[in-house]
Length: 113
Length: 114
Image (cartoon, rainbow over all chains, first blue to last red; front, side, top):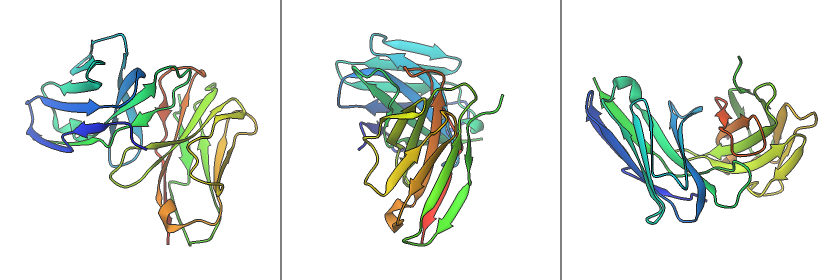
């Protein structure tokens, strides 16, 4: 079963604009991760944020986590056409000692050149 | 170094047939995961191996699905009496240890059951 929901389901922007995707989840977590998937195949890990962290940055990516609202957001700044992909959040449940991931349904991002 | 590889890339089979999907994890990675992704959905967990043993198989949908990792490296996901609903992309991931390390995903095997 899917842990969370992502919003929006699809996002279309112009190159240079920022893209924000949101993720909500239902149960307590150990950490939350964001992945990118091109063409429905292999997933690429982007960033991990732990339950005791509120914000993390990696290059053009900024992730926030609000455990009180059970939500996270991924911001991609200065988007590029190459950022076109599906983006998934995934959680590792609290109390888990291994990395069993529960994924959301994803946001399809299209960046127009 | 080489990433996670999966074979075959695509598999077409007929309803009722048996299929095997193979995963070669990154060398030295002790943890291996299988996920299944249906069209338009996020991946769903199937099974987790730590070394040779299946530490968590709670995601296997029924007893037609079985996975092995006999030498703690390559893993095979086996599906008996395939059904049309088994059609999906089957993803394998590995991580260095058995904890919460980053998982590296393979390109997946797209299974189509006719």
